[in-house]
Length: 231
Ligand SMILES: Nc1ncnc2c1ncn2[C@@H]1O[C@H](COP(=O)(O)OP(=O)(O)OP(=O)(O)O)[C@@H](O)[C@H]1O
Image 1 (cartoon, rainbow, N blue to C red):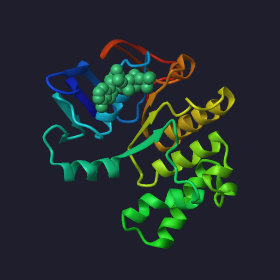
Image 2: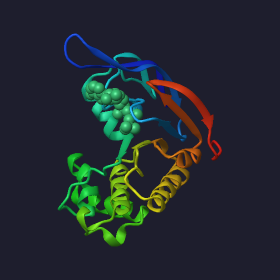
Image 3: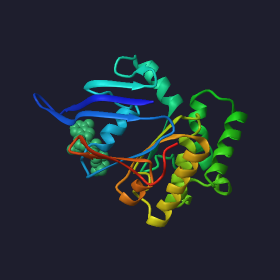
């Protein structure tokens, strides 16, 4: 499904310098897998995730997402694929404050031109899935960190993505709440068959995935099996 070959990422940091952050990444993630990416701060995890999520393009290398040649496809096709196939979850939730949980989840569907009735029904269904149906009229300010992350996960799922990319989703949460969010990912993986790529600083949570990829200084230095068996 996700196939990265010899990916290099450089950032332009003012003439004449370019900073090379990823130095030739080869990575395949198969449909239905639950994979984690670990590594020290600054090792390039988010940079890699942004490339996988087509939020950025590699400087060199090849990236095929299913049969799409991401490095050579036009921007319009890429944003279409991103919206249809990929859901994003971030450490900082990225919810709109002063807007209810329900409306936050509805918003991507509004942009997609989906009618109000369908939007509302889908948002309610997803808030139920993440156990937030009783709080759907609350604004983010009225929710705990774990609850906000549940709403953010519901929002990430609106377009039925095949892939969920989660960048430190439990990073701002205490361990008990983080545990519950991880249980939710397990549920989504198991019951909905979603492919999940998770960045985490927690070795304990990474161990629970099917495969753990270790990044160091922009290179994959290790890959091992986690504790849950493959599909
Ligand atoms: N747009 C950019 N321009 C220049 N340098 C960048 C840019 N984005 C990231 N970097 C650099 O790339 C390196 C890797 O950053 P990245 O955010 O991918 O690391 P990370 O492993 O996700 O770190 P953390 O765990 O702290 O979030 C860092 O040194 C960072 O400063």
